[in-house]
Length: 143
Image (cartoon, rainbow, N blue to C red; front, side, top):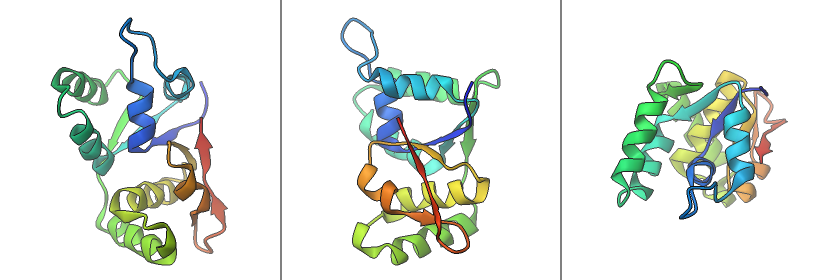
């Protein structure tokens, strides 16, 4: 098992995607997800995932069951008020990226939890963001 990760919407969706014959559509994303010692799922990411899976309710129900099963490595993370404030601060600091609340919250949770590995498809934004007290810490993007 590797270190903990935080999942972003695109990264989680790719990790869960399957071909018609039930094989991983993006095996590198699935490997990153299944190899992590802990998978932190921010609440706002889960809401976005639900939006994208609105035509696939069985898949969403399965994901919810897995996240809340105490036997899995998933950890559902509600944002603290301070996380939301920090997300908006990061959005303002990196205003050219137009981060928004969800990506800002992912970065704020990474900062608070000191989990710097993010499973994401959004390389443009997450490679540019810096977190920490001096905004000097880069995130490690997976896969």
